[in-house]
Image 1 (cartoon, rainbow, N blue to C red):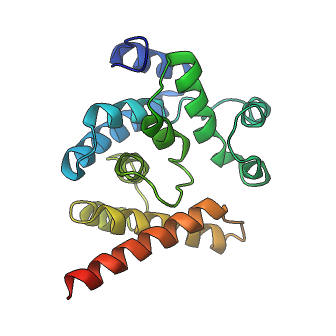
Image 2: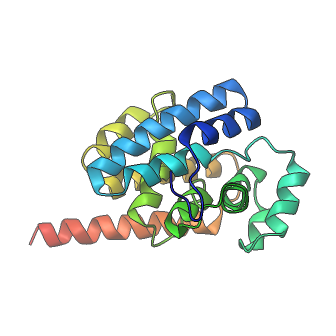
Image 3: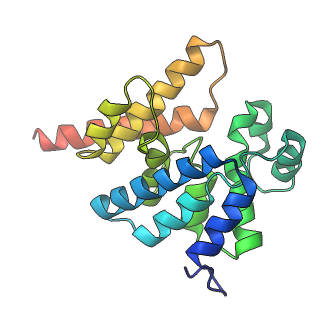
Length: 202
């Protein structure tokens, strides 16, 4: 895999990941890789970039929370994320790991890693593919996942909007705050889907 000045093999990335995460998360990542490549091929993103982002998206997920906090503070990512659930922090940190440890310079790949948990408005096709793959990989089991999988075969935006909508509803049901980028991403996807449907309906 070409990631800037050096070639880093898929095997090296997978071994690095295996050293950082428990076995069940490694299996999850293999599922995300599979789903991301399939979605990339279907919707016109680069499958190799999708695979790369999928491999690295959770590499920092099991870091201690204070290590994650310090890494976010040292990054250029919006610092307001630190006021929200720590589950959101590993995405921007993983992007920094990809850049500094593995020499990834492709901003689309870095953004796909960076925003795979939060989403954001104006996501590229690759960002959408990786974010959605994280929801629908074969090992995921939650109410509504099969509907999202079916929708993913026909409409990338609508499927991701439904996935993010489910996350937002879950957080609200538990009295938790929703990160603003996630709300903005949801609204952006819903708007794009509605505009396309309107245009198609003439």
